[in-house]
Length: 117
Image (tube, helix red, strand yellow):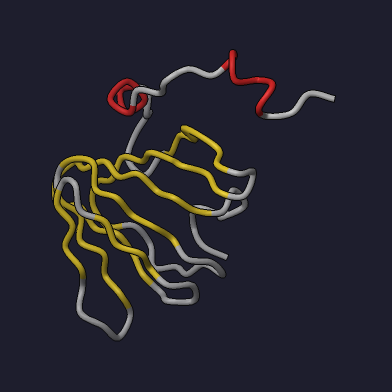
């Protein structure tokens, strides 16, 4: 049986910038890495308004470039600029909004559906 540690020679650095160029359109995601078999790092392109939704787990947004406004039901929105992050707590209805093209890294559970739980 091969373990993750035994596969270290197969690992390579992941270029977020290159992954961004492969995204086919707005609100499309690409998985970049798995961490501890329980967490996935994804990159996504945002343009416009994403539908309101919620998840049964926390969702971390890290703004890679551009600017993203995370609207939260019943709360003030959070504006993220490149290099800033915010965690939407589980169960909170939210939607990301990008007036112009922006890219984000998402850190979440691998089973998290794009449109919520």
